[in-house]
Length: 399
Image (cartoon, rainbow, N blue to C red; front, side, top):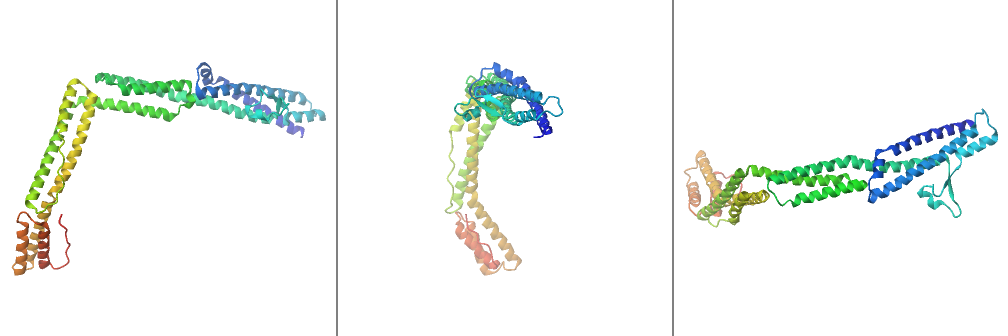
């Protein structure tokens, strides 16, 4: 190798070594390192930091070997413009050959299996050792960064959750709630998370804290909902009473609609009447007692239950009432069609036609005689339609 190339190699190694020195000092000065040294660690973080701390010590030993090698290279190079051939060969071997010997204790753990029987060291070139140092330093940095990110990013959130728990307890106190199992459950989870985050931060993931936040927010929202209900309890009880009255009225409407349908429509096909849940009124009375005792969470639970069940019954009763009115609605539609066809007969001059008159009278009698047979009435209306309007017509199936 030419002397100029060796000088370039020596300068490059010197620069890379100086850069490594700066990086090593930054790792030593990392504030997370000082905290790690003082904190009782557990689990994965304890194992990772033990490895990283050992690696940091080795990095300084390797750095010393590099420095010694470069110092020896500077001595060999000297200040001569053209050193003798022996010095150049020795300089080349030092800078580019496997000139750095690491003992088994100094070697990276990944190379321990490479040591053959009777060999007590591993040889590296300066460039190879710098590569190993870069890789090892990144591993140390990864531990420091991971711990720092967990502590700086997640610990403040845990502090915020503890503060939020205090606010929830204040709301629970104002509600006179003695059963706070849900609060205690999330409090234990917060304490467990805080303990884990302090001792083993590398195993705590952001989504773990996200899930805990969601659980606490759910408890918070529940207590706020109960507190809001307490403030409007009179209106809410009145709304529930109105809802129950609407259920009773709709059930009555179903009964009346079906009674009328059976009286006016022959063989009317009707849905089953809705079931009346008498327990709802009793439960509403029990809610009033809970209000008097200040058991607001029970009040909120039972009010929601009564309202949900009542709304379901109301929707069902209204559907049944509508279906129960369908036969009479069909009869009325047939009456309307008959009147429309008669008006058409008058327009086309067939109102006095004997055949049309007889057909009209039969259809009219069927539709205005109770109970009405919808099948027969439909056929008679369509016969009259054929007489006064012989063009194609839609056929309707009675309901």
